[in-house]
Amino acid sequence: MNRVVMQTLASLGCGVMFGFGLSLSGMLDPARVQGFLDVFGVWDPSLMFVLGGAVGVATVGMLLVRVMPRPVLADAFNMPTKTQIDRPLVLGSAIFGIGWGLGGFCPGPAIASLPMGYGAVLLFVAAMVLGMLLHDRVVAKVFR
Image (cartoon, rainbow, N blue to C red; front, side, top):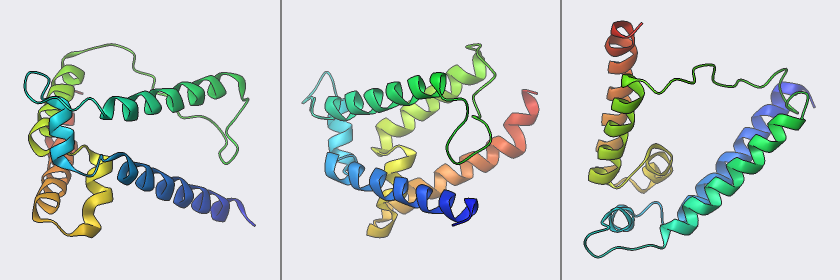
């Protein structure tokens, strides 16, 4: 099999596994996510295990990046070069957190929820795409 086919199959497999994990963990349920974020109300700590699992997987991945000469299906690792905590990073993180809290979705679970066809999911993803376009066309040019 050629490299493009291998990369496509690997990406598809990872996406299916990610979507299944999101579904299994309850991350597709906005009420559950909002319950996790409601630390002063009726707090639902169950998503702490999801976050712990995500941190564990990311830690293993970053350790592998340090010891592997190159990725299995690519020529090089594409690591971020910017390391400063600046105003755009803080503002973007705040907007992300507010959107997550209000909508009960972050981007991955929202996209995984699209096949359910719920209006709230469609609205959230449309707003997310509009925000990305706005960033690329307007905001990114201001902060260059």
